[in-house]
Length: 396
Picture 1 (cartoon, rainbow, N blue to C red):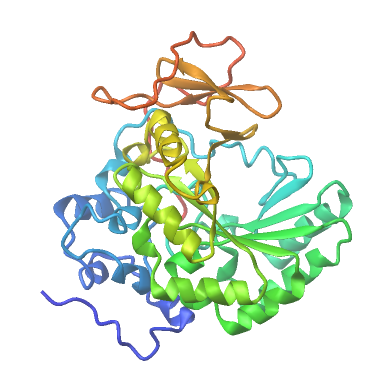
Picture 2 (picture 1 turned 180 degrees about the vertical axis):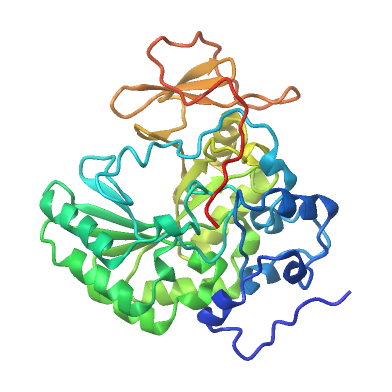
């Protein structure tokens, strides 16, 4: 069986890659041999969870192995509509923390500004599956200006994270407009961009983009490599262009079952990141979002992976293992994690709030890290419900 060629004359044009994204079974068949489970997943998730894959990222998939760690991140499976322990589509309460559309003011001095709902690919574990590709979450220019005005009026905000979706789906003119207005606000000291473009579409990191970005320093970029296979020569070249423009690059990995939840893979990923001059920043526990149970791991597994790397690699090659909660990020280590209360892991947030994260242990689970068994504290907050997840329709 032959697969799609990668020698198209426009292959290195990011706009062509965006136009040619894969989102039908017929297009997918040009790149891989979809299994019956994948075909069923695409059918079952239609109208519930979107999917899109760039040709560049499709090229990284193993065409015959459905357990390929690249393929499992982007090709839908029927497991996404299986019963889940929660029906939550906004586990961090981002909407409740948004004083204006798509601007999340959770921390006192920082905001996350979801400037778009578009991404080059739609990851199956995405924190914002509720909004990516949904027209109601796209931002008109006036809505972007409303958020900028809010930031300007709140002098405590010193750090603005541009996220989404993916801010680098903006063209240079629109991104320049946005950055120039943020940089004109005196109390905004730092601008950060969260983008997976170096991973899924590195051709977006053009010389023209880098030339524009370097006008707005201090500006940082955090990207999102999950597996060593994603660190291609094209990705490394894109990172180098950012670094040459003076943009420091960090990485935020999500811990994913069967993709990167073993020591050899995680250590190889972090060491290759460092060789590429990317600082491993966070290792995220996958969020409890309906439709992602098949990708979530026990928190003990992530703690064991983190502890196992200590003393076996460079200290700055070990990211901080964290869980994002409505009360801020919690380092998942023995200083913050109090113990396991049945199907929940109980922890303290930075302000002392107790958070109980739904995190059932598989029946056959064994791990080098064992958490003390504790009763559920009366003051613990949790998003757990007694009902199974029922997929919610999304706008087409």
